[in-house]
Each structure stands twice: as C-alpha cells, then as structure tokens.
Length: 346
Image (cartoon, rainbow, N blue to C red; front, side):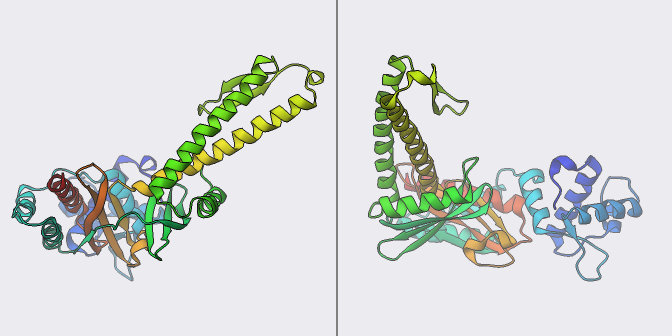
C-alpha cells in the first residue's frame, strides 16, 4: 500500500523528492551518500538510509537487484507528479523551438506534423498526434473500470471502428452502474452519435421531469405528499397522512411517481457518463502500467487535447517515452504545444 503525501513528514518528503529528481536526471539508483553529499539537509547517510527504507516499505521506492541505491516505483512517480513536482512555464528556448516550427505557415496538417517533430526532438521521446475522425455512429458502448475514479469508455462504431477514451467518473458510480449504462445505450441509443445520444437523453429527461412534476403535484395538491429535494438536489417525495387516507387510486399514483423518479435518476446518470465519454478534455499523464490504452509496458504517456475554431476538442498531441521522463519539463511543453495548435486552428 503506497503512502500518500499527507502521511509523509517533511524530512521524508524532502528525501523522497531528492531521490526522484536525481533518478529522473541520471537514470541510476540513488544512494544515501549521494543525497547526503549533494543536498542541504545536513543529515548523515545512515539517517537518510533509514528514511529511504521507510519509503521503500511504503511502496514509494524500490531497490533494484543488489544495488544499494533506490529508484522510485510507479506509485512513487505518480505521487511525485501529482503532489510534489513543480510545473512552471516552458523554458524560453523550448517555446522558441516549438513556435518556430509551428509558425511556418502552410496547411494545418503540416503544423500538426511539425508539432510532433518539435515535441519528439525536445523531449527525446516519440511524439504523438491523434486526429479523431468524425464522431462515430454508436453501435455499442461499454465502460471498463480502471479505478474508483476512472474508466475506459469503449465506443464501437457502426462502421466497425473502436475508440477508447479515459473518462473521469462522477462520485458514487459503481461497476454494476457502468454495466447498466453500457447496456442501456447499446440497446436504446445505437444508431446515434454520442452527441445525438446525449441530446435525446436530455429530451427524455426533460419530458420525464414534466411527467414527474404533474404526477407529484396531484398528490401534493391532495395533501398526501410533500415535494422536497435531498442534499444532492434530487427530487424526493415524502408521503404524509395516515395510511387509511391512501386508497388504491392513490397507491397507484405513488407507484407511478416512484417509477418516474427511478427512471429519471437512471437517465441522468447515463447522460452524465455520456457527457464524460465525449469529453476527455484534460491533460493525461499515464505512468508505466497505467497506460494500458497504449499497450506500452514500461512507458509513460503525456498527452493534451487541442481545439478547433468552435472550442471543441479535435485532437490530442503529446509524447511517449520511458517512465524516467523529465516530467517537470515535458508536461509544460506538451501543454504549450496543445495551446499553440488550438490558436492556429481558431
């Protein structure tokens, strides 16, 4: 079980940062003597070694083979990238090199190709550019959980195309819910693009809300129920009065309202997930085995979307390289290139 940043003391955090930075710089295991010699911590190698041992037991560092030094694990690199690394603006020389290749004029395809070349040359990695086709007509949609907060949306088009997109999951979404959403969309919304499927759902949700409001208002008007909202601002019907006031007709009305509530909540959940499947708009950093979508074991992927004139995402630009990337330098370079491409296409 890997430690979190909040569980680490200042000394452990400083030593962990120094080990990761030295490893990313040299590619070699980092020993306690190296840290003691090059840092301003004023700690003995023995003290540093004890902290490094604790970090290894926490799952953040590892000792390769019989080496006395340590290297960060994938979990350690993820913690470093998410919580410790300081990301600044791209270096002036990196910006100048990217802009020089992008500002040559010519067709946009050439600019996209130049962006790939610029990133590849500056990062010593493989540059990647993805230019999505028109949004596919849905044949099937499935969600494959990656973690409690992420899933892969697998979009199968009617033309046989398959697209995989990593999506952030709303809080509280379970594996069974993801399965139900995929089944619902495949059965009810195939033949539409994701965009049109979302529009159709929105229309159905609006109609469902109207039907729900009518059914509930009748019960409220008859003094048999109170219309309320819970903390998540979902509609709630609170039945009031004595049980003997509720005859068969009222019971049927209550059942209708209950079914409408359930149907509405289900469709809203589906609509939220569809929206996220379409977007995938934030910069993504996959480290090592996290990047299953690219099937590149032991590699890291840094990718950012770029947008067209209407502000919508039209493609992705980034790099694929070893996990021992200079993340603090490459991340702002990729972000800058994506924004430069967006400006060109605006």
